[in-house]
Image 1 (cartoon, rainbow, N blue to C red):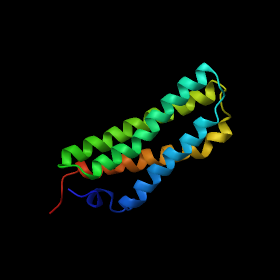
Image 2 (cartoon, helix red, strand yellow):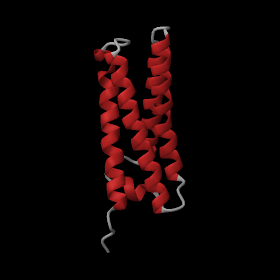
Image 3 (cartoon, rainbow, N blue to C red):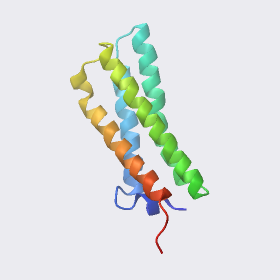
Image 4 (cartoon, one colour):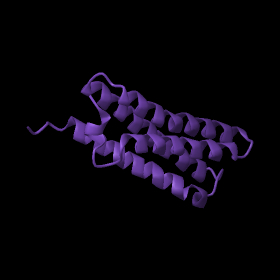
Amino acid sequence: MKVEESVSDLDKPSDLRERTTNFALRVIRLTSGLPQNAAARVLGGQVLRSDTSVGAQFREGQRARSKAEFVSKMQSALQELDETAYWLELLVRADLIGDNRLNGLRGETDELIAIFTTIVKRTKAPSVS
């Protein structure tokens, strides 16, 4: 099964691959600049783990041996994106970072959630022959 079949009109796989990598790099830079206290270390570590897993899940999905395995990996990426959104929200609500500093990153999180949701829905939909 090829990812191109499922991603078709959204992004080319290489573009989504690059986009998820850039997403992770943005969070790496963000977490590097967080305050040096216990709460920031814990929340920063959580967002870093969930965020960097998105691209890894996508790449694993590209090597899927079946449609079911591909869907599973894309759903895992979706779970990680949702978790990332949660940790970003907590960083703001705990006053560890200003909301305005996360607007772009939170927007990208929402866009990636929409893309991965569409990939899963299209892949699960019955094929019309």
